[in-house]
Image 1 (cartoon, rainbow, N blue to C red):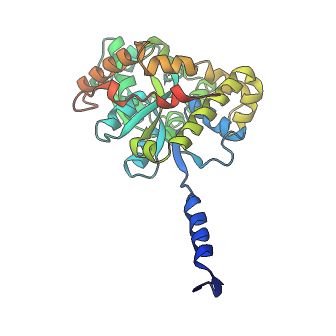
Image 2: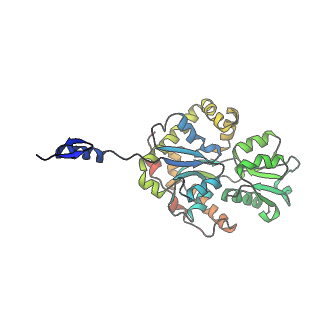
Image 3: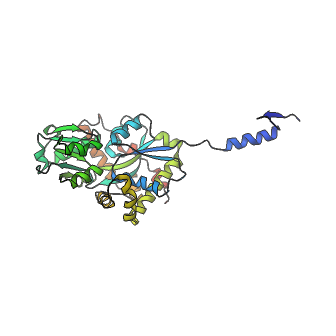
Length: 325
């Protein structure tokens, strides 16, 4: 019998065949599924899932970026496979990134997004000619446009100052702006410092929705990892609803606000469960698709996007439908 030489040891052809078969059965190490978020409180359930160990030994990496703008840039540059994005950002991104899919609804803002002004400014109408800080995202442009529209005004009636989210608090305190369109930690801090609430998302119900998006390539390459991501997130949501004070205490150190402030932030949104998610994504509850159609029309009108897209084309129900928690 002939023998083959490998790694300085004599191996028979049969032995070599067994070694090769074993190698072929072993999957190569998976690259982590990189999901970016910003400081919006609704995405904290992803970090809570991580803290609770739901992503232990899973190739999932949750990354915090300073703003939605940075998330969009990271997605365009293929530095991430998915992101937590407001639905208008998802729509704007989908216009050029044809592979983008919305796979879950995280929350529907119901007061969490706000316009805060100096104490002497009594109403949105008093912003005429004033400087308003706005994040340079589709959400920022949409929200200020809707607030002004509800008060018989347009963006031309104010001076828009482009600010990243992490600049909101300082710009307000230093008097660089008279008001700011904000959310999350800056919302909490500025309200504490006496800023006046001029407008919030409860006045445009159902129009600001936050999502999890992933690329079609990631869906094709890592379907089980994406399923693990979704399962863990909804397990964490159930944990939060069952143990709100404990969950808030776990979230608070990372977000640099108190547990009480975390609970207050979550009161500014509704978080659809799995059943509610499925009805929104499969359109048996038409509110999401109708809201998207309205949003797209507003975005085209305000030149946030160049042309309409079919909202149903970017909805993907498979992971919500297959979730077992």
